[in-house]
Image (tube, rainbow, N blue to C red; front, side, top):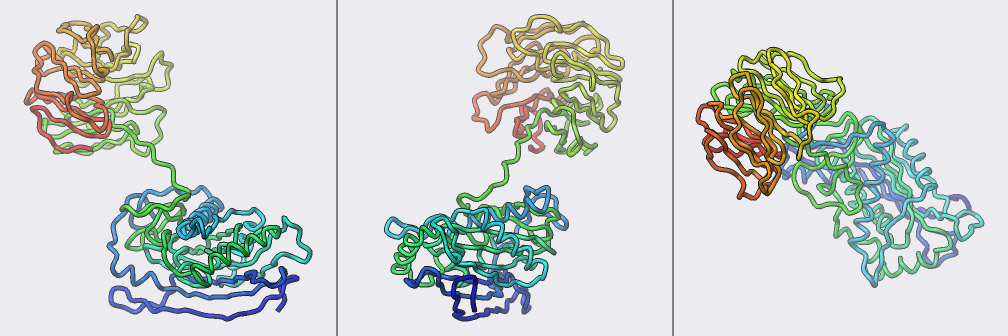
Length: 550
């Protein structure tokens, strides 16, 4: 057999098949099929190398499946549910992500064996090798059969920079078992075979090309290993040092980047969770429980934390709603689910949720002045789509619910329905932006509160005091009127409470260590108490029933 200008010698062909048992039944499907072809310099002329070939039909993971606890992940899937993914927008990006993840896993295994006296350098991807590996992955995917690629060696007349392609692994994964249907299972299948493992961990190799083709719910993978011809002496020295310590082939342990490690990448159609849950798009799906990380692995971006922005109290004061900036509404206690804006396009984030006077509905208000009505909350107009001098930060309804006022951070007031305009701070100097508004219960007046604790009373709303010009440990973030309309509470982001007029002080979170700043306050008109809601959804109840949080 001749491969290019190099002489290849077939050392042996080994097929490993394992019967697996799951739920008491014999299973014959393969978890992964892999082939390894390795040519290694062994003090022979530099244009000669040996070929090691291994064919693996691996079912090694099923025994593990029989004893592993299977947990339900979270996130949308084709069937079932699985952990939140980073879906790629096209198949090419899925394949590139899969290849990058395999590289990180291979290098993690190499790093686990590297030591000062026995270095095992990390592999570096080479564009030319990547292209060749991808071409072969495309080919075996088109045939559905894992086959060995030809190895060009170093070519006929190599220059020092000529890439010597000395070994290859080929395989496929995607047989419907979880965990292990993704890149973690593919890497583990390679590591379970001596020939493939030797190729991956050979200290003499410095370069790699990885090709991945997603097809029919499977990942067909190819890894090409080598080094620059000018580094032949270095490669021989590194391999000799490794063989002297670990033997040839290198032993299976330790393994650090196989099943149940890192954040695996899956091709479309592969199983990413229990009960046959699959991904329609492909991408990365984290395990739903802690697993060891894989250093250097391409990690999905950390999802942005969407803060909670407000709370509204339902009828009977035995339940409440929490709202998030993306329009999500979370129900607690007896509060019914009237709907939300979750998953729907918003021109601006939601800044507050406000209940109707009878507690059988609510409005969401956006920073652009948009109004979204749910339950018995009626739409009376909005500022959505209109120019604003400052974002809208809060709203309050009239006593009959047939109108409402919106307030901007500049103190501007926008009245809709039967709500009458009684004045505003718009166009006036403010020491701090306005952060909230509350109706005094008569429909003929309201208060505005600034972040510095300053109070601005309009209409027949009485002024009962403020924190303006007083030292504050944290900015004021909200305002709530008591049931009598003769007092109000201010709440600061550290959970501090300031009670004025007839509003009683029932406690605060000001001395507590908070996981997130407080975002809003809501009054319990039945008990005279109040709730605070944190930006993380935490709820603090003071002389008010606790019905849940987050």
